[in-house]
Image 1: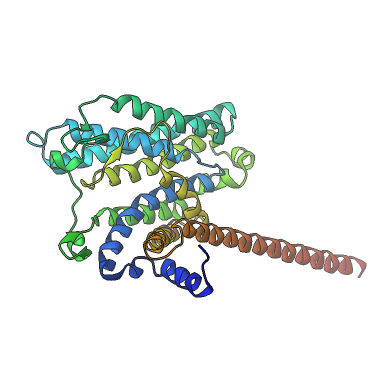
Image 2 (image 1 turned 120 degrees about the horizontal axis):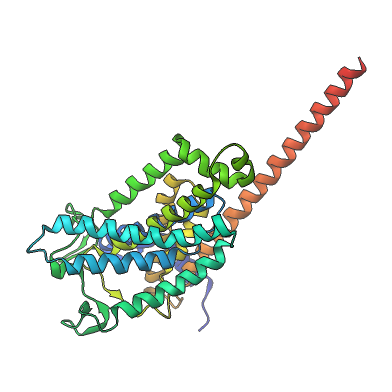
Length: 355
């Protein structure tokens, strides 16, 4: 159907309104938005540390899946009647994060010691992870047969495992229906702050950035560039997997185990979240929330207009594109200014020599 100008403007306003354009359930949508932004913050941090080290972690989806798989196995295998639920929750989070770190270390090893492009290895490990997860869960005892959801794994709440909400789920509620908001958003913020401190205030962070600027220069300055590349990818994998662990441990999420045909979108969306923030860990908190904000607006757009919800994805793509273009222009101007300063210095030096 043909869409008039007024309807187009209304559609844009709905997208920009995010959860506040959803009518009476704005708080409910806002709470879910915060929860869904949490894994994106962590996958954004995963992309960030790789970028800072001169690497491109396109393998976050695979790392995310491995983290989800191990987290679910640990949280559903240990009976909460024998071990306190908080201990199981913490153990599942740590194990899931370590699984992602090991998976991320694979492309890091190939890049550091065999000089194999990390993008190629990451793409391979993505699909290996997708098939491993499907193979492990196929026919397993973890499938949600009780609710007749044979394509999904049981929620962790069946074992009394769920992230503390601190009342956020009730604050951001839609009447009698509570949101998925929980304390994981605070954990993600703390991780972002910690990464900012590590990258900007520690020797280790300086070495990672030095490898990103000039790996050969870092090597001849006495830094172990191979170790740094390996550790950077391992940390990136751990961060992506932590995002999956937090999502699964909410207690109310269905994980679809048939992953051999699809990869989790949050694994890829961490890249624009990092780019939009200029690879600033603190900025990623806000860009991840912003991207989910636009996504919620897209869902409301599809529900209230003739537009498709993917219009919001187009808007996000344009925002990222123009942000990158502006950064490129800024770099060109900075380079030109530096060149002019060098020319002025040379002219000044030549005049002094003549005198």
